[in-house]
Length: 128
Image (tube, rainbow, N blue to C red; front, side, top):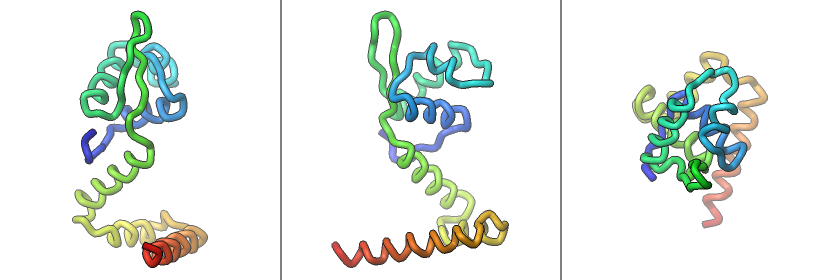
């Protein structure tokens, strides 16, 4: 599997369905993408491309392929945030945090949770 996993909105929506269900056929995945009105062939192409990238794997069940995720939602989230930081914030995670705070995307209670997480990470490093 590739280290950098950046997905389009549609790929991410499809992966969320797979993470929720565990595995799906193309027909089930097409039905599960509510409100998208996608052709069966479009979903099959998406899954084939994700399989080539190592993001999903397939197995044959009779005449149909059943797909399952090979990466976790957390792995994808980490990779996509890292890519965002590298591309938009020139590799500076503090710039992303400053942007979120300045744009009022972070509520006061959120800042306390971030501080608690940072304190946990600091305490965890001392245990190595």
